[in-house]
Length: 298
Image (cartoon, rainbow, N blue to C red):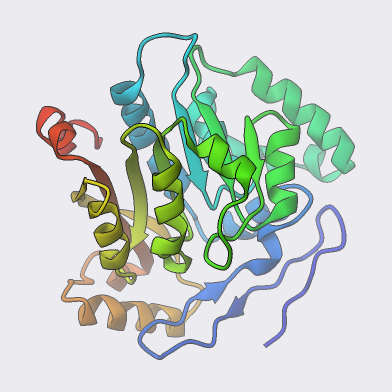
């Protein structure tokens, strides 16, 4: 297998299929996750109808309202795991949709720009569309260049390029995690374990909600057990959300095998050609009782 590394605006980006057990082989998109800007990301994922951040936008805004104090002086602090270029922050805090972002970054105008021009263009664009009382979003991702872009255009209030699966968080990240009230994940749970969540929850000074969109091909049991040790009860929302189209028949077959092995029915979901995610929301038990899950999921 080979992968083509992009060398500039509009360069082609390859997709490779992971060497994985037959039960679950997924395509990997490593080449698009740590570029200097998000143009390749949207160019590659657009044809596959990648939609999870768009579904999450509606859920995360409801969670923000549920957790906000009502004081603009103390905005809600959100930690977005696997934040990439700050896409969830863009959708949470600005009057834009995921479709708007696809159109923007795959446009001829965007393709003609240097990175510095794109940063200036984005700063103006997002500043003009920023909602009142935005959340303060901190980004965490192993992709240093992607995090840097999210900070440069003003989407991320702070950002950290660290891998908590292989090393403990640095002092600055631990300090930033103190004020976090909501942790969000729309992609990457397949690569995360309690090693990532445990130090972040240990650093937080107040109870944290954790909202994760999890592929139905992936188990969330170990993470949920970790969160339970911090007093968080995990619920799974009833509806599922299409994530993206399969790149080929092999990927479709492996996904179907994985969900069947998990005791789930692929009918109307993976069987129809798309990965599906399920929202898992973990909260203190008192919050579960006071704010039922079905009031937070559109």
